[in-house]
Image 1 (cartoon, helix red, strand yellow):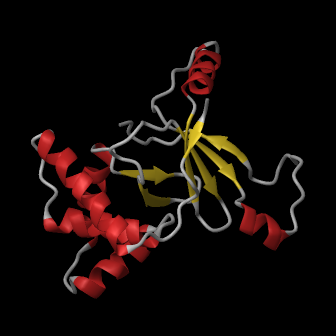
Image 2 (spheres, rainbow, N blue to C red):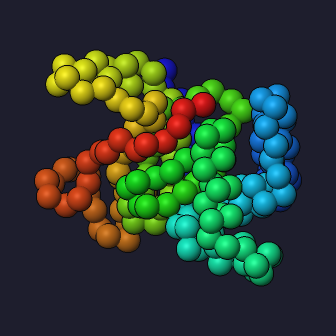
Amino acid sequence: MPTSSRPSKASSADQINAQLDVADDLCNQRGKRLTPIRRKVLELLLRHGRSVKAYELLEAMRAVHPGAAPPTVYRALDFLLDEGLIHRLDAVNAWTACHDAGGKPHDLLVVCTGCGAVAEVSDPAMSRQLAERVARTGYILNSHETEIRALCPACQKEQGVTGGHKHGNGHGHSHGSGHSH
């Protein structure tokens, strides 16, 4: 049965601290360090509860660390991505916290191209079928996560969308270069 975590919304401070503790534990188990900068970048992503563009993240970091430089933030993002604590979303050119880093791996990221909200879905059977279908073309998937461009309920309402599928409207799916858990 496919499982899905709720589309991301801003979390409470308690939830955020719990998720940061899980991230800390995961890093320690792997002999890695969630340094204060890495922790702050993850905290900001968790606090936003949606995907965040790099420049927004840099501005938010500078509010806390006035001297924060882009390379520092990008290095922290790379680390968090490698550790499976965040996702890179090519569909909206942004980053989002993984809200279930210590739980089941999810292989489908449903990304709203309107507001950048993300739903994390686990459907191994569907992902296996997709990988097999891709293999028939001679290609091989280079990521265990598939990004699916979609419109969340709020954006559907706003744009007056009524289901159905039209080609040429920029929807469809692409494969991110994300890192699996």
